[in-house]
Image (cartoon, rainbow, N blue to C red; front, side, top):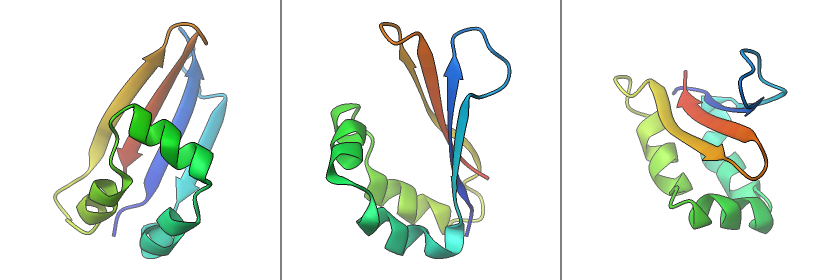
Length: 82
Protein backbone atom coordinates (compact mmCIF):
# COMPACT_ATOMS: atom_id res chain seq x y z
CA UNK A 1 0.00 0.00 0.00
CA UNK A 2 1.17 3.50 -0.81
CA UNK A 3 1.75 6.13 1.83
CA UNK A 4 -0.52 9.16 1.83
CA UNK A 5 1.39 12.45 1.80
CA UNK A 6 -0.23 15.79 2.48
CA UNK A 7 2.01 18.81 1.94
CA UNK A 8 1.17 22.42 2.64
CA UNK A 9 3.16 25.09 0.79
CA UNK A 10 3.22 28.85 1.10
CA UNK A 11 2.56 30.28 -2.36
CA UNK A 12 5.71 30.30 -4.45
CA UNK A 13 7.75 28.17 -2.02
CA UNK A 14 9.56 25.07 -3.27
CA UNK A 15 9.69 23.40 0.15
CA UNK A 16 6.55 22.59 2.14
CA UNK A 17 5.94 24.32 5.46
CA UNK A 18 4.08 21.22 6.70
CA UNK A 19 4.16 17.57 5.64
CA UNK A 20 1.89 14.85 6.99
CA UNK A 21 2.63 11.21 6.10
CA UNK A 22 0.18 8.43 6.82
CA UNK A 23 1.76 4.99 6.21
CA UNK A 24 -0.22 2.90 3.75
CA UNK A 25 -0.42 -0.02 6.15
CA UNK A 26 -2.47 1.99 8.62
CA UNK A 27 -4.24 4.31 6.19
CA UNK A 28 -7.60 2.53 6.41
CA UNK A 29 -7.62 2.65 10.21
CA UNK A 30 -6.10 6.14 10.36
CA UNK A 31 -8.78 7.49 8.01
CA UNK A 32 -11.37 6.67 10.67
CA UNK A 33 -9.37 8.61 13.30
CA UNK A 34 -9.17 11.86 11.35
CA UNK A 35 -10.87 14.67 13.26
CA UNK A 36 -14.33 15.51 11.97
CA UNK A 37 -13.24 19.07 11.17
CA UNK A 38 -10.44 17.78 8.91
CA UNK A 39 -12.74 15.26 7.24
CA UNK A 40 -15.31 18.03 6.64
CA UNK A 41 -12.59 20.24 5.13
CA UNK A 42 -11.67 17.45 2.69
CA UNK A 43 -15.33 16.85 1.91
CA UNK A 44 -15.92 20.56 1.28
CA UNK A 45 -13.20 20.37 -1.41
CA UNK A 46 -14.96 17.29 -2.84
CA UNK A 47 -12.08 15.03 -1.74
CA UNK A 48 -13.33 11.56 -0.85
CA UNK A 49 -11.01 10.04 1.75
CA UNK A 50 -12.60 6.62 1.26
CA UNK A 51 -11.63 6.66 -2.42
CA UNK A 52 -8.07 7.66 -1.51
CA UNK A 53 -7.88 4.67 0.85
CA UNK A 54 -9.10 2.40 -1.98
CA UNK A 55 -6.58 3.88 -4.41
CA UNK A 56 -3.71 3.35 -1.99
CA UNK A 57 -4.17 -0.42 -2.36
CA UNK A 58 -3.63 -0.19 -6.13
CA UNK A 59 0.09 -0.48 -6.94
CA UNK A 60 -0.43 1.56 -10.13
CA UNK A 61 -1.96 4.51 -8.29
CA UNK A 62 1.00 6.71 -7.40
CA UNK A 63 1.65 10.41 -7.63
CA UNK A 64 -0.29 13.58 -7.02
CA UNK A 65 -4.02 13.07 -6.58
CA UNK A 66 -5.17 16.59 -5.73
CA UNK A 67 -3.71 20.09 -5.59
CA UNK A 68 -5.79 22.72 -3.83
CA UNK A 69 -4.78 26.38 -3.94
CA UNK A 70 -6.15 28.44 -1.08
CA UNK A 71 -5.71 31.95 -2.47
CA UNK A 72 -7.08 33.69 0.61
CA UNK A 73 -4.64 31.77 2.83
CA UNK A 74 -1.80 32.09 0.30
CA UNK A 75 -1.30 28.30 0.49
CA UNK A 76 -1.26 25.26 -1.74
CA UNK A 77 -2.10 21.78 -0.45
CA UNK A 78 -0.86 18.72 -2.36
CA UNK A 79 -2.26 15.25 -1.64
CA UNK A 80 -0.28 12.36 -3.11
CA UNK A 81 0.22 8.62 -2.88
CA UNK A 82 3.88 7.62 -2.73
